[in-house]
Amino acid sequence: MEENKNDYFLKREAKEKETYAKEMKNKMKKFLVLAAILVVVGFGFWMFVLPMFQASNAPNSSEVRGEFFPAQTRQHIAMGATHPDYNSDPPTGGWHYGNSVQTGIYDKEFADEQTIHNMEHGHVWITYRPDLDKETIEKLADIAKSYGSKIIMAPRAKNSVPIALAAWEYLLKLDNFDGSQITGFIKTHRGKGPENVPDFGFKDFRQK
Image (cartoon, rainbow, N blue to C red; front, side, top):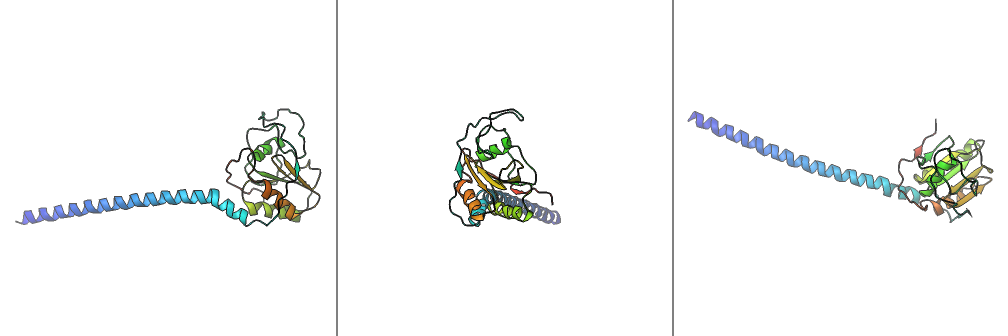
C-alpha cells in the first residue's frame, strides 16, 4: 500500500515537472518571438522613422537649388587613378572611387573622388576651409546633426570660398554662414542622388 502511494506521488511529481517544463518552453518561445519583433521594430525606427523625425525638426527653409553642373560620368576608378578635370569645385559628380565615406562630421579631409560616391547615394557634402572660425564650424555641425543622416561635413583646403555645399550635380558656394541657404540646399537635395541608398551610422567623428 505504501509502495503504491509512493508511486502515485512520484508520478504526480513527474507530471508536474513535465507540465512546468512545457509552460517554461512556451513562455520562452513567446519571449523570443516578442524580442524578435522588438528588434525588427527598433531597427525600422532607427533606419527610417528617426531620420525623418530628425529632418522634420531641422530648421525650416525654402528650396535652394544652387548652381547646376551636369555629371560628367558615374564611372568608378581605382584609387589614385588619373581622370579628366571636374567641371565644378568642389565636384558634384564624375569619376569616383568604389568606396564611400561613412556619413558624419569630421576634422580631416577626404579625396574628392571618395565623397563623390556619397553624393551619388544622395548625400550632401558640407565643406569649409580649415581656417574658418570655430564658432562658424560649430554652427555648420549643429545643422549637420539636426538632419542626422545622408550628411558629410569635413574641411577642404582647396575650397575657393569659406563654405561650400555639394550634392549630385548641384553646388552652393557661400562667402559667409547663411543658415537658411544651407538648410534650404540640404532640404532640396538630400536623398535625391541617382542611387538613393539607405544611410545609417551618422555621428560626430571629430577628435575632442
